[in-house]
Image (cartoon, rainbow, N blue to C red; front, side, top):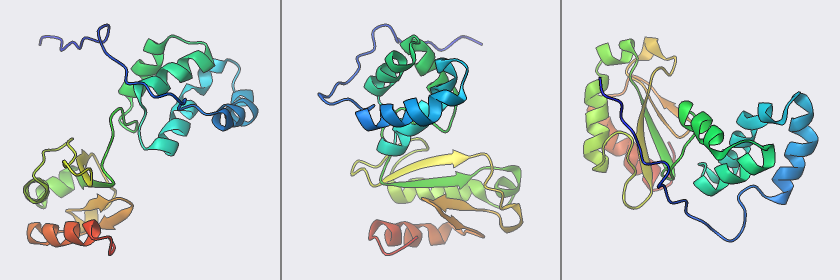
Amino acid sequence: MAWIVKDSAGMKVERRSEPYLTGAMREHLTKQILPRYEQKKGALLPCLHEVQHAYGWIPGQAMEEIASFLGVAPSEVLDTASFYEEYWLKRKGEHLVSVCRSIACEFCGQPAITQAVKDALGIDVGETTEDGKFTLIELECLGSCGTAPALLIDETLHENVKPEEIRGLLEKVGRGTGH
């Protein structure tokens, strides 16, 4: 298998004038988080969480700011953030649609659920709609095997889902009338 490489040396980092790692964040991290670790580098994951919680994702500029704050190379921050699936390195939609792809859900019809979401939104797994409303992902397990297939829309679990229900669920969420 050939290695897939990316041009990280030629990567352009979008910039904004104000920092992502704000003074308040730095103060919180310094007083509450850093004392828990023998080395500053140990606080890398909590720093990433802090930024992601505030913005919904971790921009390149924020990774550079975290690297500077912790005294590590920016590549270490990028390597860590890109290793863990829980970190978002690009903007996600206002609503996150997460389809469970565990073996139980797959056996009970998950491929048809994923396809119904793709058809309804006009995007593929890992993409965000042009209007920025929805992002579609697949997760390994939602822990709802007894009620498979299941999907999560934002924080709301939907169980025993049928493909013909998908469009209605998404329209309801898109209108802001619930999950």
